[in-house]
Length: 129
Image 1 (cartoon, helix red, strand yellow):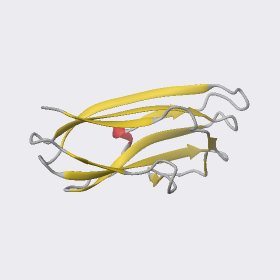
Image 2 (tube, helix red, strand yellow; image 1 turned 90 degrees about the horizontal axis):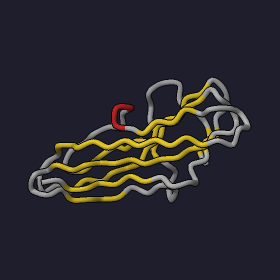
Image 3 (cartoon, one colour; image 1 turned 60 degrees about the horizontal axis):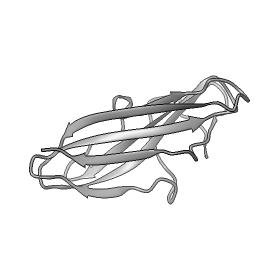
Image 4 (cartoon, one colour; image 1 turned 135 degrees about the horizontal axis):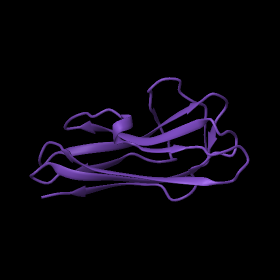
């Protein structure tokens, strides 16, 4: 469960042990498809959103950004409803290179926000030819 919020475009790494970074190696083409699937619940307020994204380090760097994120906006205080989001895009990285993907989040809210992400959330990296 994530609490707190950002007033800007800052992304934060998930706490240690919550959504761990992982290392992968690209094929010779350097092309990969990154897919994010998420489902989040915020029963506290209808005025907040969460973006689930990532940053890359290693052979090159790529910062977390809203254009590379799955995005959920809360739908109402105490409704118990969830929203699901999906994002998928090919990326051109360096070929035959090692990267570390670190899952990140960004929460915005006019009030205190609490997002429960205990449902199925994943970030998948697939090599492309």
